[in-house]
Amino acid sequence: MPQHETIAAIATPPGTGGIGILRLSGEQALAIGESLCRNEINPGLIQFRRFFDAAGQLLDHGICLYFKAPHSFSGEDCVEIQAHGGPIVLDMLLERLCELGARLARPGEFSERAFLNGKLDLTQAEAIADLIESGSRAASRAAIRSLEGRFSQQVHSLVDEIINLRAFIEAALDFAEEEIDFLENPDISRRLDDCQQHLENLLTQAEQGRTLQEGLSVSLAGLPNAGKSSLLNYLAGYEAAIVTEIAGTTRDVLREHISLKGIPVKVNDTAGLRKSSNPVEKEGIKRAWETMAQSDVIIYLVDSSKGLTPADQEIIDQLGDASLQIVFSKSDLAPVDQHDHSESLAISTLTGDGMEMLIQRITGQVSDYNQDNQAFMARRRHVDALLRAQESIQRAMHTFNTTRSGELMAEDLRGAQGYLNEITGEFTNEDLLGKIFSTFCIGK
Ligand SMILES: Nc1nc2c(ncn2[C@@H]2O[C@H](COP(=O)(O)OP(=O)(O)OP(=O)(O)O)[C@@H](O)[C@H]2O)c(=O)[nH]1
Ligand SMILES: [Mg+2]
Image (cartoon, rainbow, N blue to C red; front, side, top):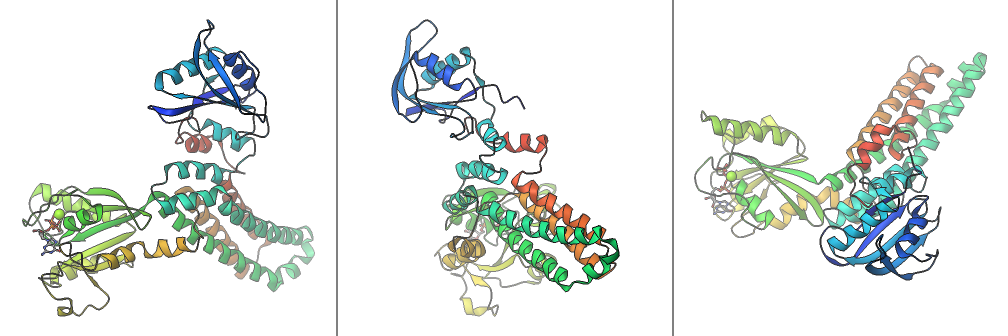
């Protein structure tokens, strides 16, 4: 990785604003910044400077900050130039920085350098992007906790636990004759159990963090005319979907990103489920099933005025999953106590009846967790790595309970450790880094 190049970017978003910020990072940052100003820039000071083009013509004036390595975001020499926030003036300044020897930064390159220089680990770098892009307050709070290192600390303490256990088992291998005695030690079983338990807790938290990052995916399902599109519109707060009294109105899956109690939620309105010979409707129903299969929560709407019909029951049986919530719609048309499904909820998009409760149920798990100030941001990649680590620990436990081969156990523990290290980035390849940082914004 040629880190000797000095990179430059406009760090503020495109468009006009009071202030626009340019950043430089690398060995030549100070020299380039000083050439732009035709003046000194000193560390630890906020200095007013004029910015000039190659011909010595004034382009703008503003403030310069110099962060001397390693005391900067990227760990390299960094100069920050605060100019006026117009796209043309910022472009001219950036062009001048490039004439002076900087090259345009790739997306996320400042963060990538911060990672490579050990200023941040990988989860923290990812948390910066997640904080910038967070779609809700809960997500934003979780991201800052990850950035502060809460997730990484837990991963590190789990890695330490595994390293200690590995050291114990590998010591037994070094004294092959005594291996049996060592491995008879009940302490190993207890420590494997502890690892497994801690890993499981971390996995639950990471799943929650992933939900906050990606948004909870909720599908609205039911027979035609059950009131799915009306519910989508109610939750979205505008007429996102067409609502008519004609059964089979919705065909395509409609997706709305909303925030419920500070939790990002993706609501999918789907085609009413029924047997149909219309090819368009058939395709819609196929997509409805696919969407349901991929969602975290399915809200199955039953029209209160019709009650739970055999057709409903057939679909519910087919869905048969814990993430299913049965909700009686149009409660204004039929009193709630007409049906004896005590656990189900009754709502009306007309009167707003039951809506607060429904929102509570949708967000319940995630928000309870978030209220304890426990949640941290996590991504699918982290969850996958934790799952692989869990498999390895389970294999080690199985070996302990069966053949008790120290070598196999040590191998699986080494595997688990590797997967956990992938999360924080101690153990990564360039492809993964490229993939992660390329999704960042330019200037970060
Ligand atoms: N009284 C009453 N009518 C409702 C309520 N919700 C929906 N409706 C009516 O029920 C009919 C069907 O509503 P939709 O929201 O289009 O139902 P859907 O489940 O999306 O139907 P499809 O797209 O055909 O599957 C419309 O005439 C709505 O006005 C409600 O809470 N109360
Ligand atoms: Mg509809």
